[in-house]
Image (cartoon, rainbow, N blue to C red; front, top):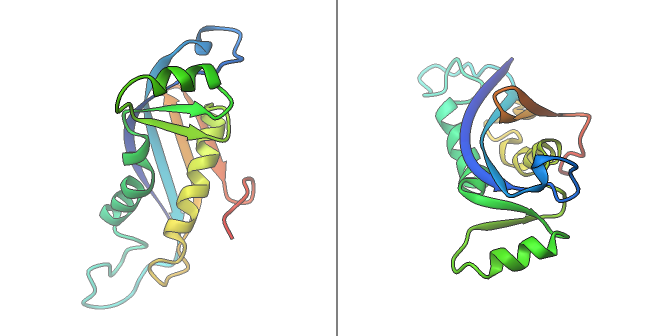
Length: 153
Protein backbone atom coordinates (compact mmCIF):
# COMPACT_ATOMS: atom_id res chain seq x y z
CA UNK A 1 0.00 0.00 0.00
CA UNK A 2 1.17 3.54 -0.72
CA UNK A 3 0.18 6.68 1.18
CA UNK A 4 1.13 10.32 0.63
CA UNK A 5 1.28 13.35 2.94
CA UNK A 6 1.66 16.91 1.61
CA UNK A 7 3.25 19.80 3.52
CA UNK A 8 4.14 23.34 2.48
CA UNK A 9 6.92 25.77 3.36
CA UNK A 10 8.46 29.00 2.12
CA UNK A 11 12.12 29.35 1.14
CA UNK A 12 14.36 31.58 -0.90
CA UNK A 13 17.08 30.57 -3.34
CA UNK A 14 18.83 31.50 -6.52
CA UNK A 15 20.37 29.53 -9.37
CA UNK A 16 23.61 31.46 -9.95
CA UNK A 17 24.36 30.12 -13.45
CA UNK A 18 20.79 30.36 -14.76
CA UNK A 19 20.36 32.36 -17.97
CA UNK A 20 17.07 33.99 -16.94
CA UNK A 21 15.19 35.29 -13.88
CA UNK A 22 16.14 32.45 -11.54
CA UNK A 23 19.70 33.76 -11.20
CA UNK A 24 18.24 36.53 -9.01
CA UNK A 25 17.32 36.21 -5.35
CA UNK A 26 13.71 35.02 -5.09
CA UNK A 27 11.47 32.71 -3.11
CA UNK A 28 8.82 30.06 -3.52
CA UNK A 29 5.89 28.58 -1.66
CA UNK A 30 7.17 25.01 -1.92
CA UNK A 31 5.00 21.96 -1.42
CA UNK A 32 6.45 18.57 -0.65
CA UNK A 33 4.63 15.27 -1.05
CA UNK A 34 6.04 12.32 0.84
CA UNK A 35 4.94 8.92 -0.44
CA UNK A 36 5.53 5.87 1.75
CA UNK A 37 4.85 2.21 1.12
CA UNK A 38 4.28 -0.51 3.66
CA UNK A 39 1.94 -3.18 4.90
CA UNK A 40 -1.37 -2.14 6.40
CA UNK A 41 -1.11 -2.70 10.15
CA UNK A 42 -3.61 -5.28 11.44
CA UNK A 43 -3.49 -4.99 15.23
CA UNK A 44 -6.85 -4.83 16.95
CA UNK A 45 -6.88 -2.12 19.61
CA UNK A 46 -3.81 -0.34 18.19
CA UNK A 47 -4.23 3.37 17.35
CA UNK A 48 -2.66 2.65 13.94
CA UNK A 49 -4.82 -0.38 13.15
CA UNK A 50 -5.76 -0.26 9.47
CA UNK A 51 -3.02 2.23 8.57
CA UNK A 52 0.36 2.11 6.90
CA UNK A 53 1.40 5.05 9.09
CA UNK A 54 -0.55 7.75 10.89
CA UNK A 55 -0.59 10.86 8.67
CA UNK A 56 0.08 12.99 11.77
CA UNK A 57 3.30 11.02 12.39
CA UNK A 58 4.39 11.52 8.78
CA UNK A 59 3.90 15.27 9.25
CA UNK A 60 5.70 15.39 12.60
CA UNK A 61 8.76 13.56 11.29
CA UNK A 62 8.90 15.62 8.08
CA UNK A 63 8.65 18.88 10.02
CA UNK A 64 11.36 17.88 12.51
CA UNK A 65 13.79 16.61 9.89
CA UNK A 66 13.21 18.90 6.90
CA UNK A 67 10.31 21.35 6.75
CA UNK A 68 11.08 23.36 9.90
CA UNK A 69 14.74 23.57 8.84
CA UNK A 70 14.01 24.80 5.31
CA UNK A 71 10.94 26.93 6.11
CA UNK A 72 11.66 30.66 5.85
CA UNK A 73 15.32 29.91 5.18
CA UNK A 74 17.47 30.83 2.22
CA UNK A 75 18.74 27.66 0.51
CA UNK A 76 22.23 28.33 -0.80
CA UNK A 77 24.74 26.32 -2.81
CA UNK A 78 28.04 26.02 -0.92
CA UNK A 79 29.97 27.40 -3.92
CA UNK A 80 27.81 30.54 -4.21
CA UNK A 81 30.36 32.45 -2.13
CA UNK A 82 29.11 35.93 -3.06
CA UNK A 83 25.63 35.13 -1.76
CA UNK A 84 27.00 33.36 1.33
CA UNK A 85 29.06 36.44 2.24
CA UNK A 86 25.98 38.62 1.84
CA UNK A 87 23.76 36.34 3.95
CA UNK A 88 26.47 36.08 6.62
CA UNK A 89 26.32 39.88 6.93
CA UNK A 90 22.67 39.69 8.03
CA UNK A 91 22.53 39.07 11.79
CA UNK A 92 20.58 35.95 12.69
CA UNK A 93 19.62 35.17 9.09
CA UNK A 94 18.30 31.62 8.55
CA UNK A 95 20.52 30.10 5.89
CA UNK A 96 20.79 26.46 4.85
CA UNK A 97 24.01 25.67 2.99
CA UNK A 98 23.73 22.83 0.48
CA UNK A 99 26.32 20.81 -1.41
CA UNK A 100 24.26 21.23 -4.60
CA UNK A 101 22.69 24.09 -6.55
CA UNK A 102 19.17 24.52 -5.07
CA UNK A 103 17.14 23.52 -8.12
CA UNK A 104 13.86 21.66 -7.65
CA UNK A 105 15.56 18.47 -8.84
CA UNK A 106 18.44 18.76 -6.38
CA UNK A 107 16.20 19.80 -3.49
CA UNK A 108 13.94 16.78 -4.08
CA UNK A 109 17.00 14.52 -4.09
CA UNK A 110 18.39 16.06 -0.88
CA UNK A 111 14.97 15.76 0.78
CA UNK A 112 14.74 12.10 -0.22
CA UNK A 113 18.14 11.42 1.33
CA UNK A 114 17.21 13.17 4.57
CA UNK A 115 13.80 11.53 4.91
CA UNK A 116 14.71 8.02 3.77
CA UNK A 117 16.44 7.28 7.08
CA UNK A 118 13.62 8.83 9.09
CA UNK A 119 10.78 6.66 7.85
CA UNK A 120 12.63 3.41 7.25
CA UNK A 121 10.52 0.65 8.86
CA UNK A 122 9.67 2.87 11.82
CA UNK A 123 6.35 1.02 12.29
CA UNK A 124 7.66 -2.55 11.80
CA UNK A 125 5.50 -3.00 8.69
CA UNK A 126 8.16 -2.77 5.95
CA UNK A 127 7.62 0.99 5.79
CA UNK A 128 9.86 2.83 3.36
CA UNK A 129 10.02 6.08 1.47
CA UNK A 130 9.09 5.65 -2.19
CA UNK A 131 8.90 9.19 -3.55
CA UNK A 132 9.51 12.79 -2.66
CA UNK A 133 7.70 15.19 -4.98
CA UNK A 134 8.81 18.78 -4.55
CA UNK A 135 6.66 21.50 -6.10
CA UNK A 136 8.57 24.69 -6.80
CA UNK A 137 5.40 26.25 -8.20
CA UNK A 138 1.92 24.77 -8.67
CA UNK A 139 2.92 23.87 -12.25
CA UNK A 140 6.56 22.79 -11.79
CA UNK A 141 7.85 19.93 -9.68
CA UNK A 142 10.55 17.28 -9.43
CA UNK A 143 10.20 13.67 -8.31
CA UNK A 144 12.93 11.83 -6.43
CA UNK A 145 12.04 8.14 -6.66
CA UNK A 146 13.41 5.11 -4.87
CA UNK A 147 15.77 3.31 -7.21
CA UNK A 148 16.56 6.51 -9.11
CA UNK A 149 18.30 8.45 -6.31
CA UNK A 150 21.06 7.32 -4.00
CA UNK A 151 19.28 5.97 -0.93
CA UNK A 152 20.69 6.07 2.57
CA UNK A 153 22.44 2.94 3.84
